[in-house]
View 1 (cartoon, rainbow, N blue to C red):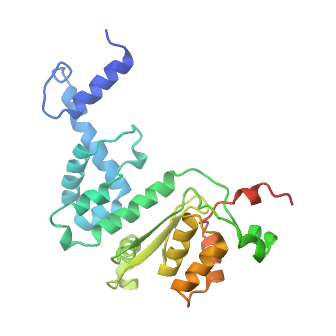
View 2 (view 1 turned 45 degrees about the vertical axis):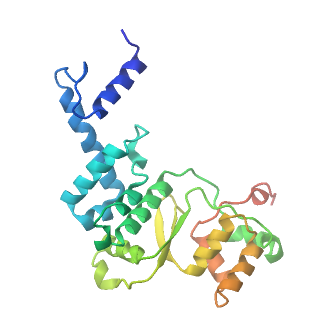
View 3 (view 1 turned 90 degrees about the vertical axis):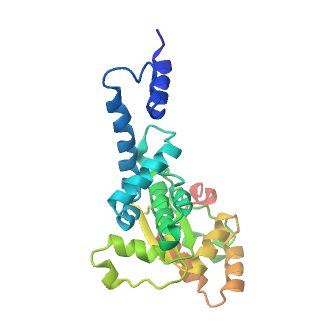
Length: 253
């Protein structure tokens, strides 16, 4: 008789085999598991991509999700983070040109999921920088918080996503066809997604690549001379975008 792990692996493979019939598939009641599994995956995708589902409609989303689940079964039994690659999958659909912002919305929703399940970290706050003085913190390399994500999209997907989530959103938010960016953070335990400018995106990109704060400020001035670096940087800090660097974690008061 097979051990439990062997049986579980055989059972999972049998569920994923589609219509092929083997010893397990012939057992009474097995079809219940085969039918339940895709439904669970579809609902997990719907929970992680609610605005994407709303845009295409329930029936179309069910069909897309069913096909995606067959191509990309979960690698983890915990479905909280299921759906990586769904935006790329949408880009491969022949009709995507009719909804050119859809994969951008999906990418934004994926980043929100990643931020939600990311590890905790000690968040950098403005008081930490004040304690070092301008010369001190401008020489720092500032790591992004584990939950921080940011993106730049060629469509107004951020505004469209916000409008779908807000009551009377399209009356208050009027998408204009232009590129947009978003910053996703988890400053107080809850995920927040806010629009960012191209200058903020450049600043975040430089810091993520390891630029010191002063280097990022100089690079920003070259590309966006009108940008107010201290103000943009303080806004990012207040949104919880950065982790406290080691020098501040070990600093004694």
